[in-house]
Image (cartoon, rainbow, N blue to C red; front, side, top):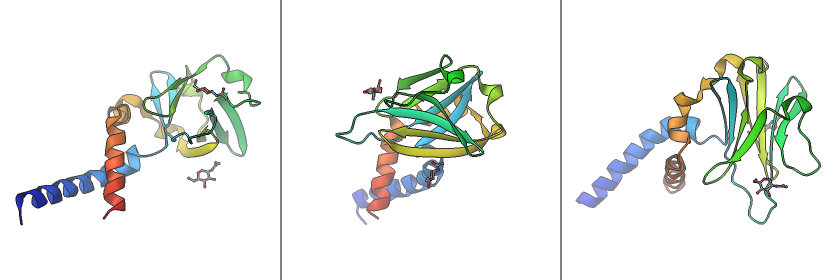
Length: 159
Ligand SMILES: *[C@@H]1O[C@H](CO)[C@@H](O)[C@H](O)[C@H]1NC(C)=O
Ligand SMILES: *[C@@H]1O[C@H](CO)[C@@H](O)[C@H](O)[C@H]1NC(C)=O
């Protein structure tokens, strides 16, 4: 076998192994973690081209959905979150919502939801499943994770 092909196979193998580790945790479209006393929700849904860009963060407990922060026109956040939540844009895509000082007040069992331009994602977490952001942000923060996700995507669809 010539060198190039075997190098390629080796790197595919490495990506395959990494993929098993990375896909479940790192290619989620929504992730939740706590940073000091703050709850942070990252929404990494790709915005649809040709659609007005908008975001909405909410959670539901039992069957009650509460909007935390949004800029969808006609939709308003619940009053209790108005002054303590903040949304910033993530590079290269997505939005991050930070809920200040709310770590100890999150409901025990919560479905966190976000929507970007109408497309939604959600994740259900028990209070004690919330991880410190420092433990998960190493990969998530940078565009590196997106490159890995893309590579994995192509690797999986072309094999
Ligand atoms: C929501 O905020 C984003 C980023 O600040 C902005 O690009 C978008 O136009 C806003 N959407 C609406 C409906 O105001
Ligand atoms: C949560 O996401 C799943 C798909 O991942 C979807 O089927 C379900 O309807 C969503 N639930 C809510 C409450 O949005």
